[in-house]
Image 1 (cartoon, rainbow, N blue to C red):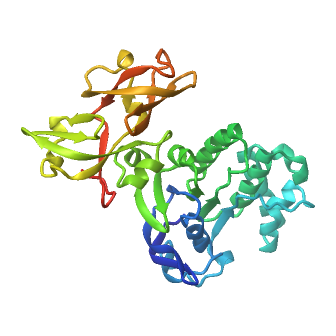
Image 2 (image 1 turned 90 degrees about the horizontal axis):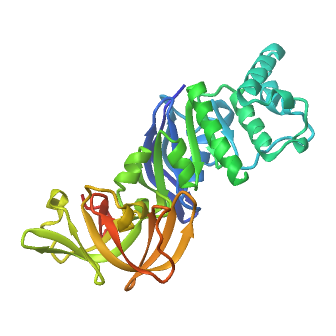
Image 3 (image 1 turned 30 degrees about the horizontal axis):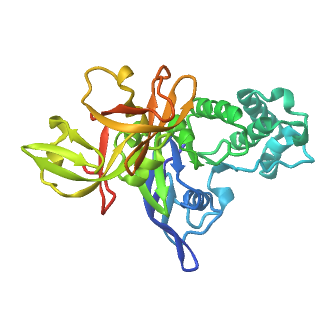
Length: 366
């Protein structure tokens, strides 16, 4: 088992710097997820750790050892790729055993490891089949099994579920989480899917344009995003954003969005009392905007008038796409709501759950 550390890691392709001074540590036995949009540098960061990309500058450590110049095969890691990369002419058993055979591992030890991994992944009955005889989910399990038999210090996963259908992705998310609990090994997992990140990770590292934006637990990222990018990336549907300005009058703090204004509860007002006239971005998540008929009691609610533009009935919840002047936003409301397209309504903003960001720096104002 081992920790992983990135120290001032930079990666450039010619004049293009795709990783910019990356610094973070992954604890021993942790499940860390690197998440971000396509092109943000998350896969490049993983490939540098695996030794598949050279580091332009900085150091990567596995445990106490700097591995910059260590060959991939000697880093004691195992990687599961987006493409299953199985040998089509080999059986499942031989695909899982191939790496061990190259290392001249004794046959008895190979059989023990393959049988054990197959039992963990519930693919024992598939060991004699060829990859073409397997479903997508079964092939992914074989690819994971091939990594398990290595018994590495660190497992690396590069978007391993992106080729699976939605239902199977949900199932495999749970399987990989259980696998981590069972193996008690360090997992580093790359995905662009924030739902995967939120449901699986011990901690999440959010990246954008080669820069680490925030690294924390899923709940902290959700409740206290460090900036506009993290706030908009984490959560589905995304947080609603409204350009506005702070208004301080008579000791009270409000945010004016032109077509409507909301008052900040006194308990949260202190950080904003010296910001009168400051341009900000007001943020609130769809689940914190309520149909008044079903609004929770004992919240600091602010009423906003809006027109229903689109409705999406999801069964267990309803999404209302709303328009207020120039502002468009989404509310996730109780499925019993009777509001329909064209209705004008008042919605309740839960002002115990708002966010304010500096319009210039895009950083959260605490």
